[in-house]
Length: 411
Image 1 (tube, rainbow, N blue to C red):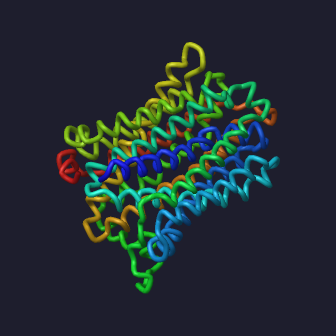
Image 2 (image 1 turned 90 degrees about the vertical axis):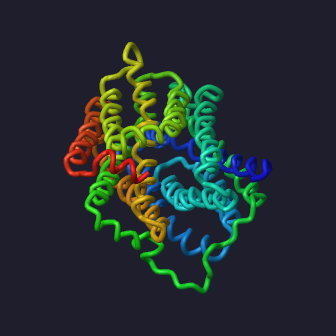
C-alpha cells in the first residue's frame, strides 16, 4: 500500500470518529442543560443510534453493495450530515431537535461500515494493516474530546449554563463538511455485488448466520452480547452528564482516557487470547463492566476522583475484551461462507436491539431516581447497571461450557 493511500485512509478514519466523538460524548449533558430533556426523552434521543444501526444494513446491502461506489455514498451521507448538524445547532426545543438527530443517525451509522469497506478494498492483509488505519479513528475521538474540554472549555460548568455546549454541533458540522468533500478524493471502491443479482431480506440482515445457533455455546455468547449492551448504554447516555454533575473538571477531556485505554488493550488482546483463552477474556470484560459502575457509584470529584478516572480507564477492557473478542469469536465460528452475515447479525443484535433496550432502560432508571426538582441519586443509577452486568457475568460463567484451551484454539 502506497504512503499516499495510507494517509488518505488514515485521514478518513480520523475524521469519521472525530465527527462522532465531537458531539456524542457530551450529548446527554446537552440534552438536559439546553433542551431540558427528561430521562425518557434522553433515552429516545440516544436510541436513534440503535435505529440507525438497524436501518444501516439496508443502505449498505441495497445501495452501497450494488449500485454506487462506497466513497461517493460516504461523501453524500456526510454532506447531508453537515446540513443536519447545522439545524441541530440551531434547534431550540426537543421536539424540533429529535427528528433531526433521528435522520442524522440513520445517515451516519452506515458510514461506519463504508469507511471499513473503503479501507479493506485497498489493503492486502487486514490482520497486518487495518489496525494501523483504524487506530486513527480512536485518535480522532480523543482529539475531539480534548478540544471540547481543554481548548474551548464548552463542557465547563459555566459554559454549559450559558448554552455553549451547543457549539459541539457546529464543530461537527464543519468536520462533516470537510469529510464529505474529502470522501470524493478517496480511492475508488466500486460495488462488489452484481446489481442484477437477487438479494433477500435475510441476507441483508445477516439471518443466513442463524445456523450458528446450532452451537449451544454461541447462543449463550449471543444472548450475553445483547444483555451486556444494557449496562453499556448507561455509560454512553449518562457518563458525561454524571461527571459534569460531580464537578469533575474537563470531563470530556478526561473521558478520552477511555479511548486511550482502548488502544492499549487492543494491543494486549492477542496476549490474553493465547494465555487465558476466549472464555476467560470475555469473563474479564464483563467483570470490568460491573466494577466500573461500582466505581462510578461510590466515587466523587474530591478524594474519590481516582475511582472516577479508573472507571473511565476500564473502558478499554470493557469494550475491546468483549466486543472485539466477540467479533473474532463470531468470525471463527461462522466459517468462510457466513463471515459477513455473522458480523452483520451480531452488529444488529448489539448496537441495534441490545443498545436500543439499554437506552430506554437507562432512561427509566434515571427518571426513577431523579426528583421533580432535578436532583439525581446517581449512586442508585450506577448500581443498577453494575448488578445487571454482574448477573450477565454469573449466567455466562455457569452456562458457557467451552474450556479456556478450546476457546483459545478458535482465535
